[in-house]
Length: 365
Image 1 (cartoon, rainbow, N blue to C red):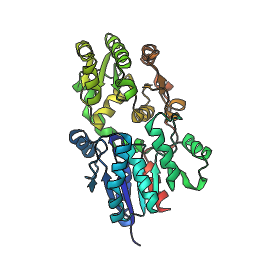
Image 2: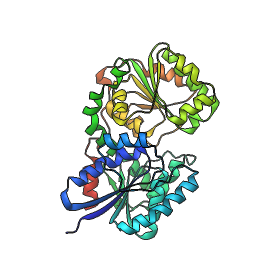
Image 3: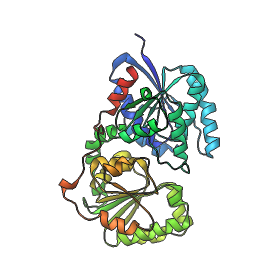
Image 4: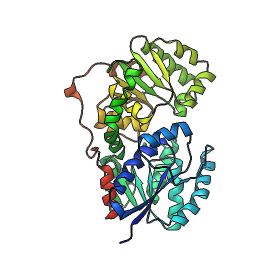
């Protein structure tokens, strides 16, 4: 029997964590799959990307489209133009796309036009906020994909409400947790908190990068003031995205944060270091989707500085809660209250480290 040809697409770092366990699971099937990996280059920094490929044991991409940054329309168009000949040349049985970045939607559109079957990993997530570019990408991708691989029951329900045929929906669990489980021992061995002089359970881990938080000088000033105040009584480690650091400098906020004695500003972290800090933190403050899931699995309180989330299961079954600029200070205080181990919730169903195996079964079935 000829191997099933699968073309994987990644466009930004969050995609790497989702593709890595799937490629590993397919490789474990011997000659049943022929795989290729395309990096669109939607978000690309050699230093930031290479460490993720190394840590996640991902092969180097077979193709890098080198699209780079641009407006949503320009970037989507460039991905489509550059991806089409790659798809035609490999002629896969399945295009496998993950997440909700522009590359996900753009490559799905190309495949749908050419009659190539599309499998969407992390299908069905909805924030119900069309002001988020990612929400548009999710809706379009799910409407066109042939196989919708969902992480949780709420995602199934969202798709059914949109009229998606039940036969296209397959709940497989959260593949991000596969990567977390696979790398947890290495993450713990890194000892990132020790290198930064941080005591377990005695610091807040912060990552913020969304334009609504960092591009508005009023918002970023209020966030900075809150972090400086929290750092007066509890250590704070802030992994500062290059764009966020530039905004802090532009708005004359960097010096105050650098002067706070217990506030450590560090460069963006590799995957294992980030997981280590997440597990050892008393609480996490983020606007990232992935950290909402990772903290839920690890049982660490998480505050998400966004008006909504496409991952509501992290709130209903996990340790996540939404926060605002108005409530951030009080919410951080509440999150830092020590909790007994018995209070920690179990991860949602199928967040067990075996989602990639179920994805493989779905493609073979």
